[in-house]
Amino acid sequence: MSNTKEKIMKASIRLFAENGYQITTVKMIATKVGINELTIYRHFGSKEKILETALNNVVTIQSHLTNYFKSAVVYDFEKDLLNLTKMLINIDEDNYHFMKFFMRTDTSKLIPNRGELQDLFYEYLLQMQKMGKIVSFDIDSLALQFFSSLQGAFFLEEYKEDGLFKIPPKDKYLETMVKVFVRGLEVKN
Image 1 (cartoon, rainbow, N blue to C red):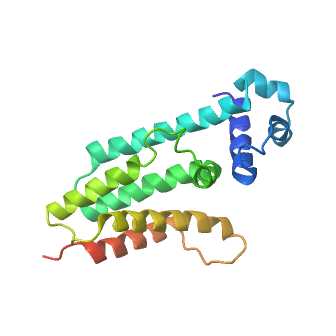
Image 2 (cartoon, one colour):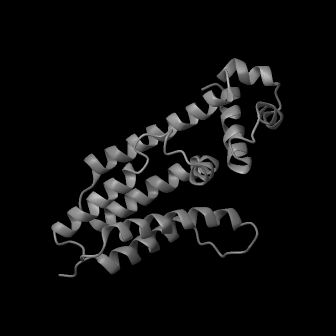
């Protein structure tokens, strides 16, 4: 992707997150990037194409995470969760504003298999229970709690500069979060 196209994408996603898709105009995007509207139309053709490109990135991310669950898990609870959290945090950091937009907007009709990651994690936890490696709890609640902790930490980063929350270094937080989760669920031999 060209430098200008990349700038247009980043500005668009930021504005979609701040104002919503409907309110954001091509003129607002052009002003944010410091270019004229025609340049945006030359690169994308329409505001809809910008959103479509951003959504294609989500599908690529989903594919990457699906591959992780299908080929890289080793059924070592702590290792698997640490690897997963590192992948998810890196994805979120790279796409912070899109994630903000994604969480606020009904994109279910636009993104195929939107809940696939949670389903894969559910299957992983179920398999870990069947293998006797974690205690039996409601898996939907466990998956939700895990992802909520991860997303919560991600969104608290926004307030780091305000001093509203004391936020530890991300790697320290992730390690602690995973250890607490593992300690609470792993079967002790």
